[in-house]
View 1 (cartoon, rainbow, N blue to C red):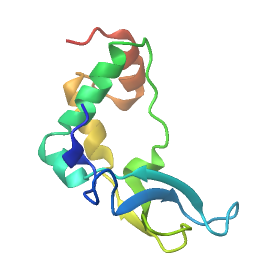
View 2: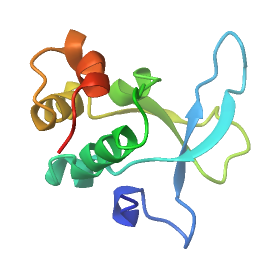
View 3: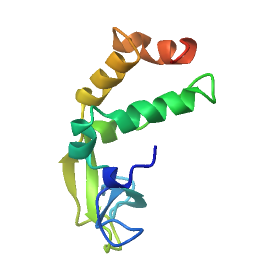
Length: 125
């Protein structure tokens, strides 16, 4: 589940870029989240196997799983890891609907409305 190649490469134990919150009405300099970024090109090439395994593993331990921050799947704010603020970042396109299409196929869900309900109520193999 922890495929290191699925995260942007950088120094050992670190990445060159991090996900941050863009500057906005609430913060002129953005938010310093510092989370690593996914290599969506690598993940897509595997059919999003890491995400499918992650969801399957999560649902083996809980009855209901929720994926938040959908904005980040469409596009995310990328900032060099050395920056002290999020001002010098840029918007980068995420996987968008392609990831959710792969999840729907993997879990045999036919429409988005039933996706969370189906994940919570269907036994996974």
